[in-house]
Amino acid sequence: MLWEIYAERMILLSKSRSYSRRSVGVMLVVGVLAGLTVGGGVGVIAASSTKTVTVCANKKTNMLRYAKNGKCVTKTETKVVVNQTGARGATGLRGATGARGARGATGAAGSSFTARSVCGSDGTTLCAVGVQGPGGGTVFYVDTEGRYSDFDYLEVAPTDASSGVAWSTTTPDCGLLADTDCRVAFVTTSGEALNHVAIGTGRAATAAIVARHDAGAVDKGDYAAGIADEYTTPTATDWFLPSKDELNEMCKYARNTGQAAGAGTACSGGTLRSGFSSASYWSSSDVGAYAWFQRFYNNLQIATFKYDSGYVRPVRAF
Image (cartoon, rainbow, N blue to C red):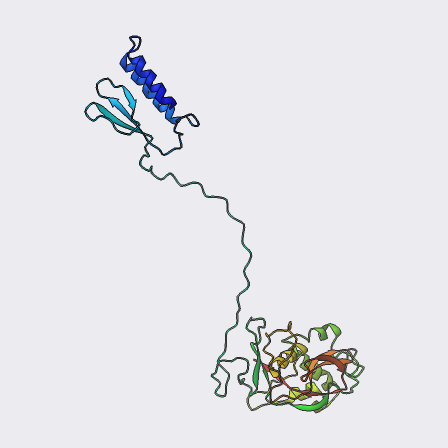
């Protein structure tokens, strides 16, 4: 090894009169340590190495020698182990706090829905789809996402209110301009009519239709919304003709499709439950001279003439 040769030369120098033993000892120590910390040389231990080296110091002369076998003469030499791992130092000071990370995406809004125990024949059962509602009908829609502030449930009447009636009848005080009959014009303005399609709008649509027909002194038994408005059960009088989207939710229940609630899913498949007719049911949503009804025998919603005949199945919200 390179530093071993260096050590041997130092020992030879110690025998020369030109150097004192103390000087040579110091030079040898320096040489040994230098050899141990130089990387890449022949027989040299790199600074990053964990290998230890044993050096023996003569007690009398202070001269050093490399102990290849790691052993020294106890009586005459002192053992020195080089490159030992020392004790672990104390933990350093805590570093500065890093920069604040980017703000995460806003989470979805929580639901404000609270289930009610006002259903069933005793009025104390937890309300759910398929359970008897407070009005004596059946719950077919639950607003579990808290979308509507004025109701949580929709309930369908226990029976059909009519098995064949027109959506509207002739009256000169009806329609958009209040000078045509309701069968050929929007009951309200076109913009309002479009707002009477969604879930939660059937009650307002029914009220608008009834108001127009009342202005023309039309008997409520002659048109769909009037029949729904007059419908009563022993425990409820606030029934109305469902909007287009509310009727679609009723279809999902009536046909037992097992589909998720919401206007984004059209009634599809399933088998018609008992208590519902394989017929076309009116909604309270109109489109000028047409109004929407839904065929419970094939699920389809169609805009048809207001003078056509259809079934009436009232609903209520609570």
